[in-house]
Each structure stands twice: as structure tokens, then as C-alpha cells.
Amino acid sequence: DVKVTQSSRYLVKRTGEKVFLECVQDMDHENMFWYRQDPGLGLRLIYFSYDVKMKEKGDIPEGYSVSREKKERFSLILESASTNQTSMYLCASSLGGGTWGYEQYFGPGTRLTVT
Amino acid sequence: AQSVTQLGSHVSVSEGALVLLRCNYSSSVPPYLFWYVQYPNQGLQLLLKYTTGATLVKGINGFEAEFKKSETSFHLTKPSAHMSDAAEYFCAFYGQNFVFGPGTRLSVLP
Image (cartoon, rainbow over all chains, first blue to last red):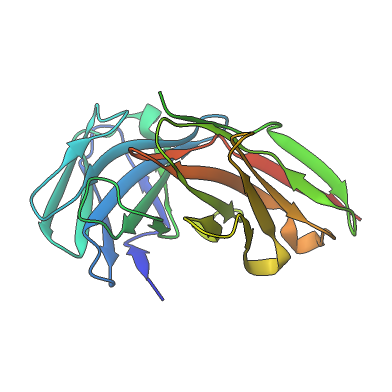
């Protein structure tokens, strides 16, 4: 079974802090994704990566950056956390040599609260 | 433009009743179609998928979905709802890229 793990299930940070969310997958997937999920807005893609050191902006990249130094690990960085970044963050991975691949496998999510 | 619509942001059924969650898509290329389920405070779990071949697809937990190209639909059904089916359900497809629908919250009443 594919396993996608996220470093924290719950996280509380203060406004202005730099926040790192880590995601690791163990199935040698090429593609990795970061989404945020908010009530009434569904899943919104922040960034994705289709190879090591490659990244593409999704629909809402503002205020976020990402890092993919190793194939299995994809990090989401909030440079200066703000209260409007309070959300559920979901990481996913998929096979595929192209940009989007096939079905995505999700981690358990990180619920981030910024106070 | 590619899009996915799910009719009804919230659906309630009685335990033992038929579950029907609707999904329609718009795509210029043949799609791969998926249904995901999300239980509270968890990630999304793949229920079933259609890629090619048989248009009636069976998934986990007794769910199934039928791909109807002429109707551009991929509705999810289960003959008899169980309390444990209460969750949020997302339809998604992969055409030129991966697109998620807005989700339907399913409540199961005793």
C-alpha cells in the first residue's frame, strides 16, 4: 500500500512565524502535491512537483513556497504565517512521468492554526 | 475548460436507504474518473476509479459508480447506507490535469 505521511496532525503557530510542513511518500512516486482545504471551498492546489527540484504553482501559491530535494519528500513553507493561512493542509502523491499522473494518494492532513 | 460539478453540497439518507451522489464533468479529452471519501479530520481515501474498459466500477465499502459518456456523468451509488458511510465525498477526474469537485457531505440518519 502507498503510504503518505505528514509530519504533524495538528500545529499551532503564531503570526509571522516561519512554518514548515513536511510530507514523505514511500512508493517512489514522481508527482507530489500540496492542497489546502477550507469549508465550502473544497481542495485548492497550492503547489505541485513532478520531479526532484522541480515545482509548479497551483491555484493559490501566494504566501507559500515549496522544496523538493529528494524524491520522497515534499515540503511546504509558510514564510511568514498569517491568520488567513489557518486551514487543513493535505499532501498527495501519484505516479506519472507527465505533469499530473493518475490517482492521487493522500496523507492524513495537518490542521494548522495561526494565532 | 475542465470542471467537475457535484449536485448537492449536503445529502441526507436514512440508514438502509439507497445512496446516490451525483458527479458531472466537462473535459475535452477522455477522462480518468475517481471518487474519494474523507472521514472527519482525515485525508482523502480512494473509493474507486474508472480508467478504461467496463463502465460500471466497483469500489470499497460496497460503493459503485457508472461512467456514462453521453451524459458526462460518474454518479456514485450504494444500495444500502450504513452509519459508517457518513463522510464527505469528492469526485475527481484526470484529463489534461487533475480536477476535484467541491465535495458532497453525506449524512446517514438512524
